[in-house]
Length: 214
Image (cartoon, rainbow, N blue to C red):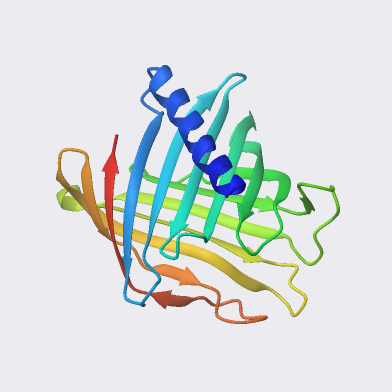
């Protein structure tokens, strides 16, 4: 319960940062995700925000249907030179050890109306004791594009390139949708899930997503 309160407090703080600074890049939004699989639907709160020293932040918290399971990640990033930057990630959740990492990122040049970014989190430590997390080195991506008729598409994902049994897919998502009313967006939002130990190719889980932008 204390960790849940921390996640909720983190999102609330991020929300205060969003509403406290007038900037088009600040954003607070909520998602209701409906999965084809029983007991796999959940709620997710998100916040994008700006911090001093040109640091960009993103925090999300997922709260699952059993009322006890949760997952949250905070990413803080800063551009260093040109398209290159550095970022930190902090991950907490039920059934896993809270952990931290720092690594490089790069924005990939793409055509107008599109965006692509890759990052590498080479090593992780536990948040409580600072011990190295073995067999974990995450290579990730995010990409988005504007489509005709007001549709947009995006995708993100992570691959553990240091898995004990070889490169292993972690988690990702695809989203294709559009705004159907003021601040309300609906999308096809399949999850790209882990497919087993040592499996680098994800398995697809069909889902629908309803998002409200505050």
